[in-house]
Length: 516
Image 1: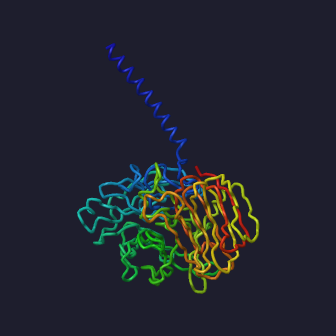
Image 2: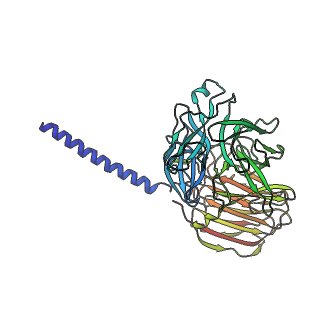
Image 3: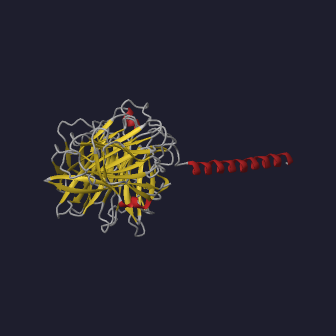
């Protein structure tokens, strides 16, 4: 027995030492994480591994829930789960355990979540309104067998503020009618028609279903563009009041997986009406929510309190052209800054404006005001950028010709250019020489945002992070989001005025503290 006790003792000591070492490794990772070379400092990103579309966004009891497409075992796309995080202010996030795992019905693709306040589903307990997740099950074996029915809609429910989930025992709740791409359900409650409304993508169109209980669904409508051959994804549907009026319109958002305004993926929208069965709008008037290449699958939060009243959303900050090969580790992908959407009527042209949420103010630190003057030659405004994340604000007079160009650069001659082209009436982001681009033939490029509308000044609000830029121009009427990967941090901000003089009316630089 004596040798046996020695062996047991040695094994116990080894186990304790191993645990201590693991604690050190875990603690070391905790300290070092979120500070990698390209890790965003004011944008949401997963602790590690692959992330894409935002999912299941819902507000409940003081928390904004952000679920997301997640593969916990690699930095490239794989069997999809729903990752999960919560925030009290839309800016600083707490990571929670994975909410939904793949099962016998398939991977857990994109979807939405709602609070079933009246327990119409019967899935609540002890007077607690259930949180219902509606998502696409994707059967990989069915896809490999060339079936057309490998995607269908299912639900899960939670009665503990989204911390644990139970999948509905009779999933799927909507069978596939024979459409190969049949996914990404977004569900809303229609006060006007007193029923649940679901919209989801069916290859090149949106389908509409309605229900009284979130379980039994009836197909009621369809909306699409005749002759369109692009893949639609991640639709959203909601009413929104036109600013400065009592008029209400309906918005149908749909993300397009190819042929965006600057190539690859992009998020678009239509303005119209909803008759209780289907969205009604002009299919020829497709508009773009963001002209950059890196705001995809943008969808909005449900159950925002009436006293708040805002329409809030977020997008995946990448593009399927290169999302799986960008040079980040141990994580891959981030979300855009949360945005508020407002609808304006510009001479009978309804346009969604997109602005950064006011909650960003919690991160503001020191500000520097720029001189109001006319620059006849290039001028360095800042030559010692001390923070990884900051906000630039500029209001310029519109030149008679030429460009307004703001350059952000580093000592290795990499540069990111942002500005406005007077002759073309376009905003632009030029990341051609902004850093690493060898991973993709299409990454280094010059991107344009259409701004062919009357304006009195050129106004640009620019959120810069370690590896992303968000241009909010003219109060959010023209928006562009791009990512980039500089070899070393950018150090200088310069107004370029070599070709034509530029008059700055107002400008500032404000540092932003990290959310980590």
